[in-house]
Image (cartoon, rainbow, N blue to C red):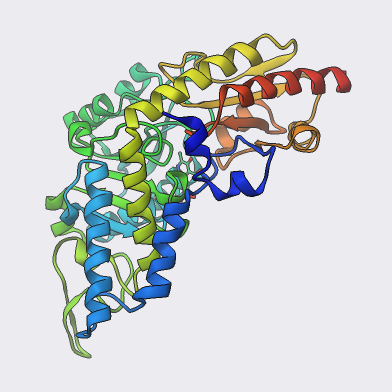
Length: 404
Ligand SMILES: Cc1ncc(COP(=O)(O)O)c(C=O)c1O
């Protein structure tokens, strides 16, 4: 990958010289081609999709459905298996609520999640259990912050109706063996949902190879715009599941007495769709495909190795991740003894223009278990350089000394 050329594709980097953006796990920067793809919709062929007989509407519909094909293909799915949602959060809520309406959960049933879950993959299941009289079971982590697979095997029982797990943890960074997790769920007759928010931007993901029933991801973390995400679901399930949102665009026929809904995924996309966002997401997929997801991951592994090395040598700095670039994503979660994490983040920003995330990162249970005040997270992506990681290490060391 030619990093110098690549960085020129990102207007935010051009407009903010000196910015060291290490907050891609929260949201990634967007390349110019993504912004232009969205602009083209507004400048050249604005129209609603799926409902007009005029040419502009047909053009918008055609491009929108091509965008779905592109996004589905990016994770190895068919377009008939990919529902556009707002984000992963909505993907999880959709699956939970629709399965509940289908009667998949009853009192005493169990849902199994990991200790590291983001709130998006925790609260929808927790609330579902509250509504249905079910039980939420939480799988422990190993001391190196990877998932304790033995504990998973113990906790998945005949009562388990859903195993829902982050492919990559947004805090402790571990990469989960998701194929094995789906196999364990299926062996007990449970369904499996994989939260791919932190995986699809960085790894080569093939939903068919993983074999989970559901797989969710968000566009804004993978160079695409905010406002759109996706849910892959197996077609046989989509056929049986009832709609999540009700409204226009999901029906075969309507009278005041009753409604007959469309089949398959079409019944899950009520209302006007995020059209420009879908075009932006498709462009982001093309951009990533051109670079090669394998190359992106290799580059991030090198950054991670350098960061583990640099940060690991700072006295009083605690790191909470597997400490192994092969088993973790490009995320370093840390704190420094005696320094409030928020102060540390502000100091990085003000001293060297280094943008990191601080606090609980929407994964309060795991972060609070490590430090009740929160933590600092530096996260890397394809536009970050070795030099930036060197500066992070040097600056972290300088800040520790100045507070010390
Ligand atoms: C692992 C994980 N799951 C879910 C989400 C929620 O993503 P979104 O806010 O796009 O719905 C995030 C966002 O940080 C995440 O990191």
